[in-house]
Length: 232
Image (cartoon, rainbow, N blue to C red):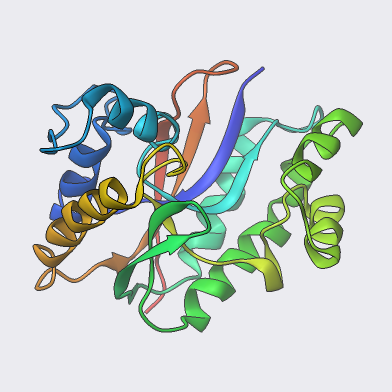
């Protein structure tokens, strides 16, 4: 069964998209594999494993996590509602830093951004009618990761634990780091820093949201459509 997700993704003609899609080794706009950089001192097979999950989901920041479409709704209705929501938003710049979040590296806001938090909460609320409720097994699978009381409440209410007060905007750049020793993690971190520094003079503009699709269980996510912000 198909799943859909609302993600922020940089415009595909920008260095932000090219730089980090090349790092992941996959372009989620075309679905094509890219030549991923090889790091000296890091086993290539281990790197492939490290990047497998973020590459499958594509370069993105989660706004509304993957969900199956509710039985009484169609994807065209979802697109219409998302388009209307985005037309009411205005573009803004976001400055990012590299951060280790628990056991993976990600890009996160340099400073707290009320705008991105507001957009994310609106999307979660206004599009929730399109989400098929989680099954009991899906809920229990999420709980295996260890959730706080508030995260568990968000899971039950919105189908995903990291929303509203538990939301943190981030663009995942790796999977789990526990297969790497301290020195190897340092090499990976340095490679990421170099790429981020190359983008210092390039503004990252949040000016649209994308509808991603997982065509079938386990398939790579692809950009189905992009919805520009329309307010000024």
